[in-house]
Image (cartoon, rainbow, N blue to C red; front, side, top):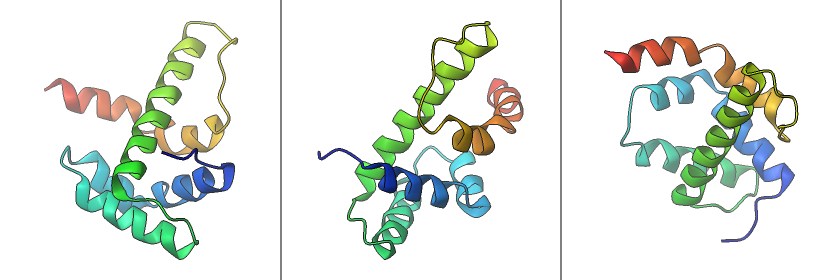
Length: 104
């Protein structure tokens, strides 16, 4: 697919930072409907992405964030990413809770 622009990623993160969206994403694995909502909201910003593209981008961002985060936790500062702070605001506070939730 075509590359996501910085503005597109920002818009995606802005929607993702919506508490309502976060709660829905936390509680589910089958999240097609949520990403259809996300895609519809992106469309309002004039961004044409389908739900699959949104989900893939979300997964990739999350994965990249987690690998940067764990590198930092182990004392490495060499790894960084463009939207780390924005993602940290969304993911940073809830990763421990989620980790313990997924254990049981």
